[in-house]
Length: 384
Image 1 (cartoon, rainbow, N blue to C red):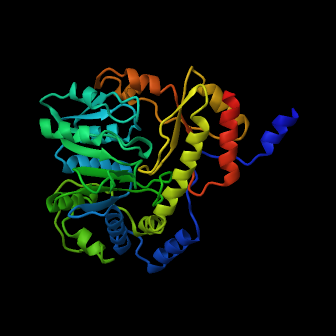
Image 2: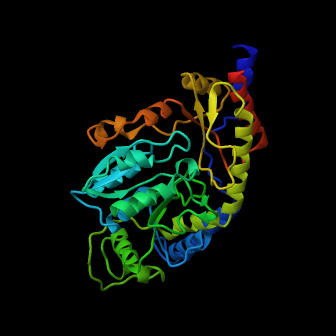
């Protein structure tokens, strides 16, 4: 083994994701266990209230779920999506949106993305609208706001529901307002790799009391009284089943972790924004890459994604791996997966090009200084 190889082998591994679990989270978890009510309960309600307060909701309502995918599924159902409908969604995303659409019995229709923010291309979406189109799901990729104004313009023109996939964007803002604070339906994820985690989890934000009640039924097996009683750490022993429902509720234990995290979310976001700025400042002058953003003031960064040009992505990933630095890929286009290959779609020229370029670099809340510098040095050394 060469001297440089031996040195790289001894360096601490830098993963793409590291959840921030500190003493405060452990205390919240222990306290929740001590209460003895492990299922959905008062702590779940508190987490929902803290989400609403953080997003500065006025007249909107939060329903916590056990995963972000569950949130997307019941959000679609609450929006009235079902068999015979079509839902337009970018192919450039994780497959959860597309599976959730299929769960409802509706058909997935995939559109292209913009080259600048990797969000939905509203012109491409418009070309795919038919009388069967019921809803549109835009993604705020990597926490970067998409063309939300364009999405809502389409929704108004064609009477569509909007289910915003903000699973990457808890804390991102548009015109000074947090994503989820207004609009139609918004979904968030709190899985292990998101900015805040509840181990796994998600939530739906809606406007009306009727949709809130529907979501409560959908979340917990269609039972009519259980949510109210469980929020008191109790059970309704006499109840009716009034609607379709699933076992999608968030437990007190998971919610306790989420509460500990949301208390720290502003600090998490600020630390990640600073890392992203440092990455972009270092990489923006390199020949062979494109950075997505220089300013991150409105972004709650879930990941840092770099575009690697001229077919060098695999070589860069291997180079980083040799220096004990992990890298990821977000995303493989969904229209290229076997299960969705027959779904209707538009031209995917931007998606297909971007999907060969994007690489995800390590980004952690309060990332170690030496880790940040190692990533910067490694990427710069590769391209120089």
